[in-house]
Amino acid sequence: MSFKKIIKLPIILIIIILAFNICINLMCGFFPAKYVDEIKKYSEEYSVDPYLVMAVIKAESNFKKEAVSNKDAGGLMQITPSTAKWLAEKIKISGFKDEDVYKPEVNIKLGCYYLSYLYDMYADTDCMLAAYNAGHGTVDKWLSDSAYSTDGKTLEKIPYKETEQYINKVNSYTKIYRILYKIRMGRMV
Image (cartoon, rainbow, N blue to C red; front, side, top):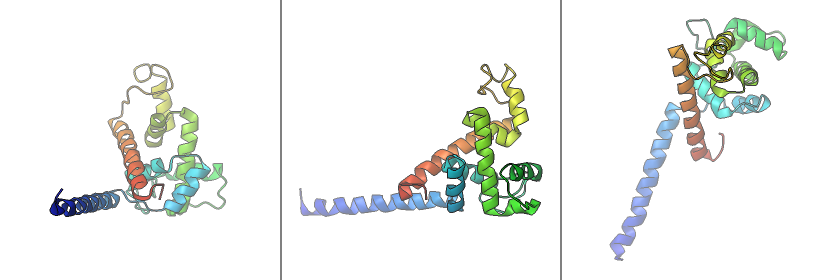
């Protein structure tokens, strides 16, 4: 091997590594990791995948803590006032006020608990996400209808296009977050 070829190989490797790092940094811009301490804390406390929590936040509010939906759901994880009050009572947050849903720590705590609650109810991630999006009463109806569920535990078909797209989006985002931040940091950031 000539001297020129020996020199070119490390340069090519350096270029590949730099290009890879640029791509990872660009992806991190599209898939940010904000409120990591709160996500770690409450995903661990309520046994929820932290990458799934990040994916839900990305899908729900794109990490905008002041986000409000057309159905009056608010904060990072887009929780409605009635659900927020019910969750706050359930996990004993004293003095909870409607505006507390816009506090990232409170919102993430409520959202993580709610995801855990729904997973305990259904033992299926897709049903959990469907209930988070469309309501658990709606998912219960679908599970009891043989047109949507043959076993009463999982959904083969989701009649709401928005909910089906939501589940697919969150599942995709979860995979992206898991890959992206494991590559970047070797662990959850």
